[in-house]
Every structure is written in structure tokens, then in C-alpha cells.
Length: 79
Image (cartoon, rainbow, N blue to C red; front, side, top):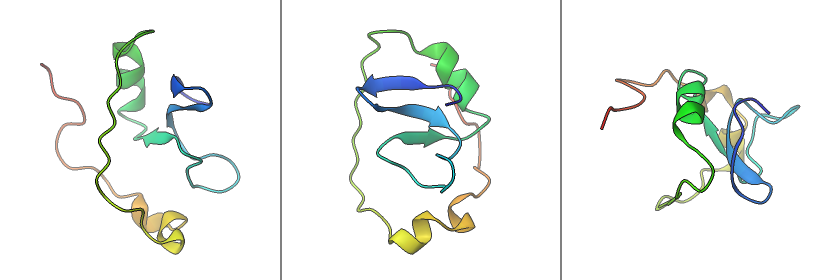
């Protein structure tokens, strides 16, 4: 798994889909341009806070190419 960063056993951040179906098994997929930057920034014991307030979209949307749109603006902000 490219740029794998585990935040819970068997769950993590990574780049790209899980073969052969482009959907998530509970992980958080990162844009291919952001994944190497994120991977370089986090270290073991880096705190992770996931605040998810939106309901999951329909399953048909999750496996369509509609979710792969070009992000706008910078992918990571310098703090």
C-alpha cells in the first residue's frame, strides 16, 4: 500500500484504491500528490483526530470516477 500511515490496527491513510475495486475499507485515501508529503510529515505517535460529520455517499457514487476530481488550491498548508 503506497504511503501507508496506520492510525489504528488495520486502518490508515494511504494513496490509491484498494485493488481491484476503488473503494475504502475504512481507511482514508490521500490524493497522489498529497500522500508523499503527508507520509513525510507524520511520525510514530503523531496524534490523529478524525472529525467526520458527513454521511457516507451512496455506494454507486463510491465506485464511480466522479469522486476523483482535481483538488483546488494547495494540498497542504505550511503552519
